[in-house]
Structures are given as C-alpha cells and as structure tokens.
Length: 178
Image (cartoon, rainbow, N blue to C red; front, side):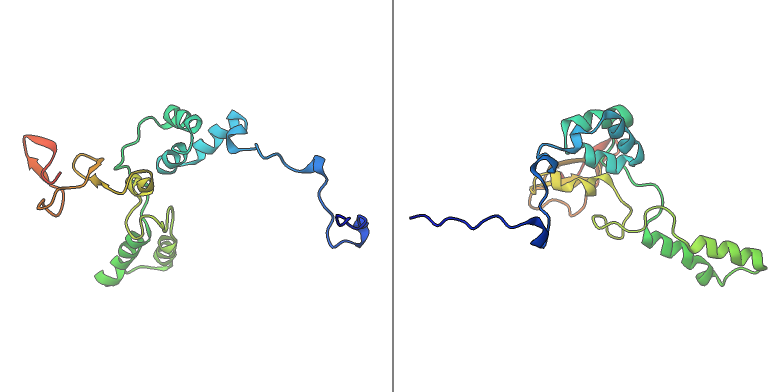
C-alpha cells in the first residue's frame, strides 16, 4: 500500500509563505526581451570596449552595437589612466621636490589625487584596458594576438622571434614573428 502524504499544513504555521503559481516569474524572461529603447540606453551608457564585449553575447545586441559604435579595433584602449598611471602621475611632485605655492595649489593637488575614470581592471591588471584583453576568452587558446597586424591569429612557429616586430619598412602591417 503506498504511503499517503499528510494533510497540507496551514500557511500560518509554516516558516515561509510559498509563492503562488500565478506569481512565479516565467523562465523565458531574458535581457533580449526588454524593449529596444532600454537596449539602446544600455549601449549608450557603455564605452566601446564594454559595448563590444556585451555585443558578442547575442546577434541582436551585436546589431545594436554596430549601429552605435561601428567597427571597433582590437587595439582600442579605454580612455583615462588606470591605477598604475595615476601612481606615476602623482609621484611627479615627490620626485621633482614639490611645488611652491599657497593654499590654492594645495587644494588643486588634493583634487588631482582623487582618481577619475577607470581605476582597476581584473582582466588587464596594471595596464590600461584594451579590447583584445577583454574578449580574449572568445578566441581559442591556440590563437594569439599580434600587435603589428592587430588581429588574433595562429601562434608563432618554433624558433620565431620572442616579440612581434615589423618585418619591413615597406610593409608596415606585416609581422616578422607570425
């Protein structure tokens, strides 16, 4: 004989109140289903690097990205200094012996110490953000970035030079390593 479950307990004696079936969110609700105005507002807020990475997640978002930003080079860098560049910029007065002046210069010096723009990136670490670092995971592991051609391609063959370089002044976009 099968075991019959006990009677359903009253909601008032339970630790939680279950969400009624009619109030549960649908499983098909995705970011793509938002109105187009919100998609454009999101892309309008993003810089070209972040916009490109977000656009690679969906064909729909890629179309919007291309309309707003066009083609974005893999060598595109984020505007503004990162944290290491701020350190060297602010170390200038300490190295040069400081500046003479009154209270207004001290006030401006304090304003210069506050970081503006991007401060740290977990993908680029201490270097300024570049698009190629942010979308590296979209490419296979056996491909590497060439700084001369500014493209991802096959890894250099054994015995190749350790870094990318121009092979000829006549052909500035030809790499001597790849």
